[in-house]
Length: 422
Image (tube, rainbow, N blue to C red; front, side):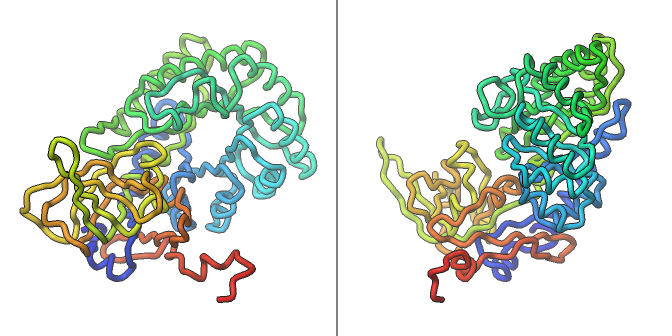
């Protein structure tokens, strides 16, 4: 059951594969972040990171719950604006923002633009002059903090594409202050994703406060410190993420202590959780197609369970070696468990949904499997590989179901092909 629905009914009415979002779960987590981070001694703004998953329905939930919105492309900004999201509560990211995206953001009146390179200083300033506005900007800093996470989602060590090194910040800020069409609002950092404790944030906060103190001493006010997102969630039973309130308390202590030691006033703080809000709220439903036992070395048998989706709706397993919890969801079984590898239908040996799972030995074609915690970075990273239509996303609440994104059709697959005759 999810949101008052039997998953068998959801599969019947909306087909599989199917993404299901528990609206109450999403709203509760968004509310917990707002309360935990904004109702403290250190004032803070919480932005929902749209890259985790965005649709107009989700943007309206975010607005309802009093959060801002973090977008990183013109496409995400377009969706936010189509939902009627207030421009002043949007922050624009991106390591390669085009002139068109910057001008789109300025026209929408976005509250903050994050400068990610020296080139962007003049690019944003020139666009702001053309629009006759003053753009409020943050500068993203690469703090040299190595988050304990997968290499591809650790973002604050030196050898990666995001932000400016600490040594470049004073000169970059001076250039910003020298452009009348820009208003320097503060600094931004993001140490990575799927982080389970506050230790990485402690190092990052200390370093960014030291940098803020340096700027303050030179006469440049630092109004805001944005510490990004990255709070982790549980994908499997051994994952143990820190509680939202506990993380907020720890970060508040860290920042307060660092500012006191540096002799500067407490700035406004900002945070950008995405996965931690939408990830646990979502599940994916698959239908089992074929089951194939394979004899391994030492007499062991691995059973390959093929489902009707795969890497086109969840690339994280192939990309990050991500692990998930999967269960038989359409019936109860007392059969002894068997070691299974849940795989997709795509023409890739790496098309693995769950590498090692214990599922009932009487698993059969037509059974439904549910994959937990797929609300983040699954539908948003989905593709049409092998021309497989992307699944629908359905929100459930109190026994009602709302289509957030409809299932793609074969007509959609042909929509961009001018040679199609159908």
